[in-house]
Length: 252
Image (cartoon, rainbow, N blue to C red; front, side, top):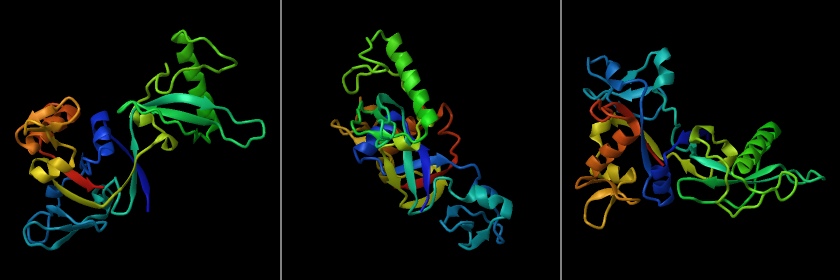
């Protein structure tokens, strides 16, 4: 079993927390359409067996060239592997190691997606990283005009600190609150998504019968697949749906 990081936007984090998102799509770096089978067809269907592909023409296996194998393996793992979610976060509070060394330097984290302020202490075993986070947080408190309570100690309510929000790409493993287990992996074209899979991507049916995301009812459409395409374009940019890329479909 391996663990790998994966980034999610705030709406997708909220969907995972609400248990409405159990699937994600990520663009492939290698297109199955470029892989030829002995019958002249192309390996258009992924089977999660390392470098094995199934030909969409004859159903046979297409063996990849050694240099292509690494590209063909899903970078997000195989069934049984785990994905730890990176999301926007910040330092909510900090606690120094006590004099006896019985408690490691620790951080309490806030999460921007849903405003959750985590109250348990998360050990930060990298002392240099801990010092940097505390120094930056103290600088943020000073800039916000918060009065110092004692040496490098400040008081504020949970979730209402002045510390900076940190991009998801910079979230360390110890700060992550979501761990997903990969159930299956396959490959398909983006526009091949079914209405059922669009719902697994976090799209929900709204009160008026349309489909979208519950927070603010964004991406409203009568068809869940079209709502997902609007969401995809918002995340990946104009023309990203029309490009119809090959994508990894990861169920968790």
